[in-house]
Length: 262
Image 1 (tube, rainbow, N blue to C red):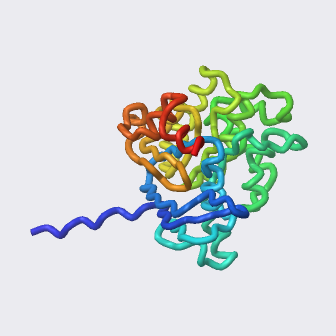
Image 2: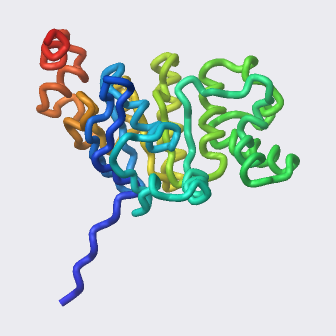
Image 3: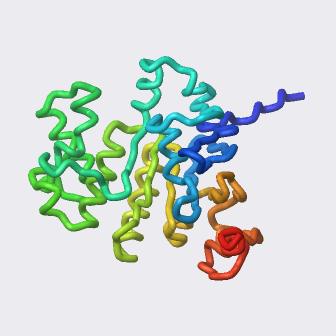
């Protein structure tokens, strides 16, 4: 009789995560498992705590309670040096790109390689050109400055920077914000391609339901400080959960509005 195959350990495991700002409790016991190689999208209304959740995982905000495990290690209990080693394996695409206006595109892409990995500038420039090619941009774009690029091109550069160090975890904060539907679909396609090429685990927060279904394998909704639903991203529009259904279909009436009235 063959031995039982042990269950796969989550890449990211969050338990009982809490965060308050003054009297406002934003995260109220968040539990979430993100499996290796999976793309998870987190949805929720404005002010629901999606960005706070990501910032807690990224060690930009210290939670009040709970645990955040990456590859089985509670990162909140690690020394600062050990934490830095963990977070060196994470890439981030910020909502508005967050490119450095004073740096040329190639240096934006290679910023982490230069700052953290101590790659020589000549080598970093060549590698930046290769990475730009992976997001559909010519290497010659590397000599331009962010202000010389369109919004869609800036988003591609930000994606190139996020994947430059070949991270095994990627975070995307509203990746299609400010883009028209066609460019948004192109960016989503590039995200999916990059995540698959790297074999990374990905987490995205978004209000865009079309984007959520394009880039997500799994989805979770954050509401009232908790995860109120999780399931396949393909089921977002037919979840059967009244809170999720109201949000994903943009209905004025429903449990979310009733709670706001109360």
